[in-house]
Structures are given as structure tokens and as C-alpha cells.
View 1: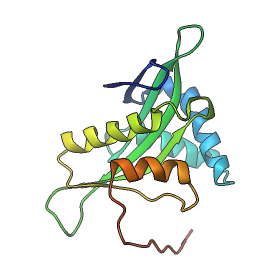
View 2 (view 1 turned 30 degrees about the vertical axis):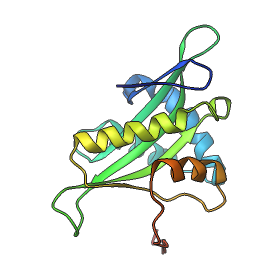
View 3 (view 1 turned 90 degrees about the vertical axis):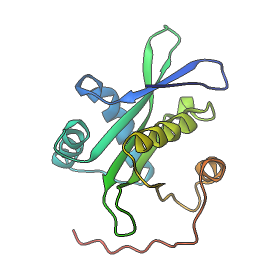
View 4 (view 1 turned 45 degrees about the vertical axis):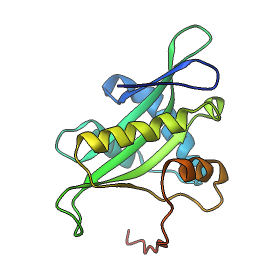
Length: 162
């Protein structure tokens, strides 16, 4: 578990997602997908959730919790990562697939805490690097990423097959 303070001096705690987090995760996942004007079939959402919880895949999910006004822990951010082999090293690399922070928690350091959780996880798993892509117009996240990582000269291309 990773603890870190945000700008409001409230503690943000991160730890792996578990079965009991499904409803909170689903709410944030749906809000994240809506940013991309995307709706996924229920079967895909269930498959994603099972991958995040399962020990038979290299897909992992983490959440960030913060105390709400009633002093209860509230899920305010999620991230999903995939570990995979690569041709340039003998160790795995870590792909940060998704990162979302609830609108009410933005600007409070939650994104930073989630990225640091991913770094810690990748280090423990002896990954050679962590990488991700983001939209070029996402200036808020890009400002954070510029502080915590190095932007490469690579350009991503993609061809959807399904």
C-alpha cells in the first residue's frame, strides 16, 4: 500500500482492487469511458474486471481512496496496468493502460499517487520501464507526466481489428 498526502492534507491510500470494490470501480470506469465517448458491452466490462482480479493474467488494477466528509474511504481514482515481455530486455515492462481521477479529487495529488503506485508495483515486479500514452490535448495529465517521466520521441499508430 502506498500512502501520500494531497494538497488538502488528507491522506490518499492506494492498494490493489478487490472484489468488494466492484461498484465503486464500475462508477469510475464508466466515467472514464465517457471521456472517450465510449460504451463497452457488459461482457467486456465483466471480462476487464475479472482480468483485474485474476491471478491467471498479467493485468492489475489499483485504486486510490480518500476520506469523504463522513470520514469514510471513497474510491477517487483508478489505474490499470499490464505487464508483458518485450524484445529489448529480458525483464517485463509495464504498460499503464488506464488512469482516471474523479472530478472531485482532481488537483489534489491523486494522479501523482497513482502513478507512484504504478512505479512501485513495476519496481517490485522487476520491470525495466513503465510506459503509457495520453491524448495530446490532455494538458493537465501531460503536465503531471512531464514531472514524473520522460516524454519520448515516439508516435503511436494504431489499426483497430475488431
